[in-house]
Length: 264
Ligand SMILES: NC(=O)c1ccc[n+]([C@@H]2O[C@H](COP(=O)([O-])OP(=O)(O)OC[C@H]3O[C@@H](n4cnc5c(N)ncnc54)[C@H](OP(=O)(O)O)[C@@H]3O)[C@@H](O)[C@H]2O)c1
Image (tube, rainbow, N blue to C red; front, side):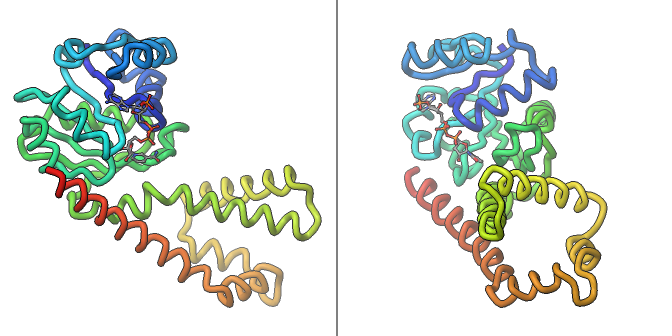
C-alpha cells in the first residue's frame, strides 16, 4: 500500500480522486482509514480503494493526513510511527507540531485549495529537513495531479492560506454579486448566474496571458460602459475590501496555527 488517506472528506477525497484520475496512483496503491468500520467501508467503496484499519495504516508506505486540524490531536497517536512518512494538508498545523506529535521528522506540509476537485488547485508545499528526496517527490506528484505546486517557506503558509486557500470563497462572492447585478438589470437568475460564471472563466483564461491592469485598461474604453462601472467600484472601495479580506484571512490562519501549536 503506497498511500493511506486519513480523512477522505472534501479535500482528502479530491486529492485521492485526482491522483487516481491522473494515474499517479492506482486503486491498489491506495487505502482510506476511518476509526469507524462502517465509515471506512463506505469511503473505500466510493473511491474503489481498500478500507484500512489501524494495522493497515501502519503498514502503508506513506500517510496523507486530511482530517480537520482540531481532529489531529485525537488522530496523531493512532497513526504515529517512528520514521513514518507523512503528508499533511491540514490548515494551521506546522511541520514542527506534526513532527513532534507523529514521532517522525519525515513530514511534508501542503496547502491546496478547493480547485483540487477540478484539477486546478494552487498548492503550496514545504517540508521538514528530515523529509527525504523521495518524500518530497511523492508529495509533489500527488498535488501536481490536482493542479499547480509552489514550493514556499513555511513562514508564508498563513499568507498563502489567506489568498489561495480562502480565495475561492471570495471569488464565489464576486460571482454571486455579478449575478445579482444581472438580475437587477433584468436577467432571470439562471441566465445571470451563467453569465457571471462565464465572465470569470474568460477573465481567468485571459489573465494567463496578460496582467490584470492591462486587461482592465483594454476593456475600459474612453467614456464607455466599463469605466463607468469601474468608477462605481472605486466609490464602493472594492479594492480595499478584497485587500482587507486577504489580510483578515491570513491573520485568522496565524491565530489558528498558534492555537494548534499551543495544544502540543
Ligand atoms: N476545504 C478546503 O477548501 C481546504 C483547503 C485547504 C486545506 N484544507 C484542509 O483539509 C482538511 C480537511 O478539510 P475538509 O474541508 O476536507 O473537511 P471534511 O470534508 O470534513 O473532511 C474531513 C474528513 O475526515 C474524516 N475524519 C474525521 N475524523 C477522522 C479520524 N479520526 N480518522 C480518519 N478520518 C476522520 C471525516 O469523516 P466523518 O465526517 O465521517 O467523521 C471527513 O471525511 C482540513 O484540515 C483543512 O484545513 C481544506
